[in-house]
Image (cartoon, rainbow, N blue to C red):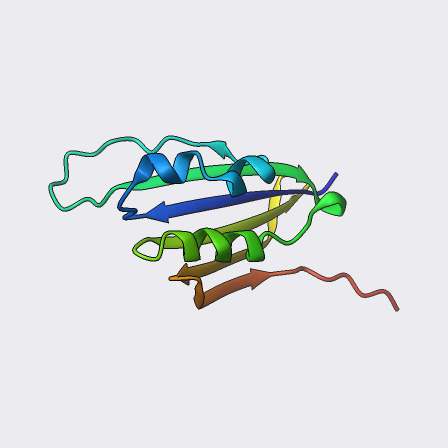
Length: 116
């Protein structure tokens, strides 16, 4: 079965608690994935969340992440989708939002089998 895990990283929010209770996270079943504290003095606050499911049940989460970014314009919101089949990553897409606007994207993948 093909699965997709969607990660959400919210970096440098002014109010981390407000991010944790934002309705977008609950409405789309994002679960918190704590980030281990480091002793680096220059580390910024960050929150990580994830949701997993079957590939065929996936809906785009870009609009909700854009809204989250708009609601926390000081933060950088990174959406990362990882598609897996047979325990192998087939597709990876990462989108960055700042102030509710798309700031960039990295995409890699799709192995296509073409028959003759």
